[in-house]
Image 1: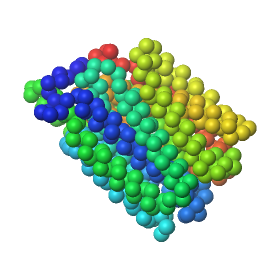
Image 2: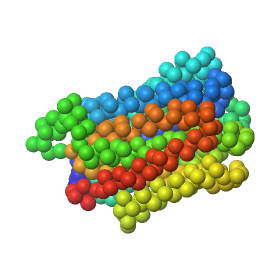
Image 3: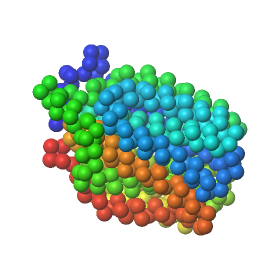
Image 4: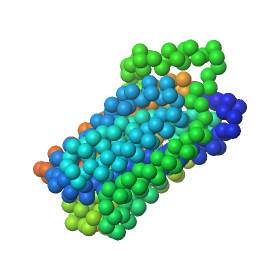
Length: 403
């Protein structure tokens, strides 16, 4: 189902929209990695145990879940362009609150991270909806490459964070500067987004009804949508555990320096970027289901090497395989949710809401297990979710119209 390119607004074409979507994904990645690289320093500044750190990280997931439940309505009413614009501004404020507030204790950090999660949730749904629109207009698979853009942003943010740690740049200065740069770049670029809905006038009323509250809740009763949500949840847990805990696991489990732990995190993100950039060729050739099942097995192998390897070098090799295997699950799930353009916003919202439960439950789960068996060993919990992803992967097969 291809939307004619002629429906683009004056002065805006699909190529400009494609670049704008890339920048939105890259900006989100930079923002997330900027925070993630400073987790060890914030942990030390607040004297947090692994379980208490897990509870602090839970604030991001809580904000995201609240936002994602509302995201279908927000995007339907504001459109993806205005949603991303607003959330970029909120996210910048959130990182500034964390950076300025952490020397004063946990409460301001919790408030800032809740805002961060809220902004990230709605931003995520909006840019995925716009990415699906662009993908349909281009007539070829590109969603994993948009998510590769997110990974590029996380790698850039991680490397910048490693440099900031090595240069002893204060957490406050690092987070505020990063937030300001991301907000300005994204707000300027998303003006080139194309309209989300290009339905003919006769269909506008039906589409509007589907975007009502009742229509959104009806989406929660669709078996395929719920299974896609479980699939995304499993891969989100594998991805999120790496983002939140790889640095800490390397520092605490292998006794590495803080800079080395951050570089291990950057390697994980680099592997995810490579998988997302080159993955579409394999998806087009072999199909969604076989590819993601092979990648789940690869991620499982990498996780085992990371946790049980004897040296830091083997842990780095495990992080590489873990990241490569986890690379396509989330973007493929988003594409599957958006197969029907008329229902893309509510279905992406539902799938993302379920998927983000991994970020809600993952940090405290790993943290509490870490108090008993170390953070490194606690990461074996990811294996159970990878098995779940393999079991429900059949749900992501394209709908007949999408094929």
